[in-house]
Length: 558
Image (cartoon, rainbow, N blue to C red; front, side, top):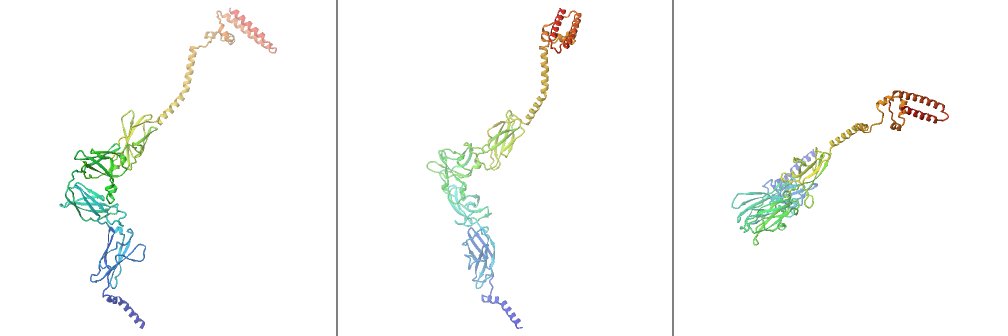
């Protein structure tokens, strides 16, 4: 029973303890501040908040911060025991690309609970402040010098100082009509103003890459000067002739000398004075005419600014309006260089980079397309093809025919809209194609088939020639008929000598009968002689008998 009573008493004391302490501190609990806002403009970090209870006086406020990877909280410098509802913690060295956490509490004799601010990244939270502006006046122009937002040693815009773009609003002090000018450099010149007139303007900066737009600067006003005796040159333009640039301008007075200067355009983005960075063009120094010519190779690829000034020997005009000069746009597009190689019934064209007069190839970073014209050398009918490739084959051409080719280049970028002149004409003869080879094979095969018939015809022709011009000495048919029996025929045509020198005239058929009988007796005698003298070798008797028979035959014919 006693233990239960002691426990209940302890519980009552613990419950009443905060009320007792609160009464001792003034009778009220402190509430945490509300609606805490973080304002970052350039490198200035400002915290603003609202009091929770305006009736409680002599209350101070303190902030803590915590970086990523930290477990403990650190007191925020510049924001400790603040009596107002605003504090500046710009002195804190932070990584502007890392998140940071903040918390705040109210303090008097006692303290409120902590109020935590949503974490944030300083760079994302930062706003662009107004740029610093300085003005210079001419008779019909105002020169504006713009310094980027932030301090000279700005941490917030350290990586973006050259990425700022500027815009301005200008108006006559006596009028409310405003003119807006966008995307100007840190040093900009406004032309075509009235002399001795007060103009006012304001400028703001922007970071397009981060989608940040700053606030306008304070309004600045300046009065233009009295009109100068010599006006500046006007209507400046650059044209291309062959491999030279021609700079032209208009001027009111005669008997003047002119000079031309150039500057890299990117230098305009850098803050500061660029007066001594302008350079003279030697070919355009102290010229008497309202134009000058200078070679293209004095400028490398890039964007430049050009300006012209007039002088009469005593007085000098202000510089003309600066014109932008882009070598990539202004430079003429040179014709392509190509080689033509003959193939079977086609031509292979290899296109290379164009060359300048010193045989140096021209490097062109923008894409090109090529227009190729070709025709037969004996005809004027041109055919055209358009190709993006540098290796082009023209097929289905006539074999063993001379074709001529020429080409020119066009820029694919519509903004450039440039075309070169046509290249020199190159002519090449095509080689024999597969059709000619097939006809050659057919011809050879035909000759081989006809060869036996030709040989046979030659032989027949030779036989006819021999028969006509070289007849044989064979006896006529009537003689052949009478001497049809072989023994007598052999006797008469025994030797060639007998065939040529021995001739017989037959007058009586009985004589032929006698010769036949004699011939038969001779054959019997030869048979007998050959049988009786086969072993003795006595052939002479047979010869003598034959000679004797021949003599007898001759006598009988006579």
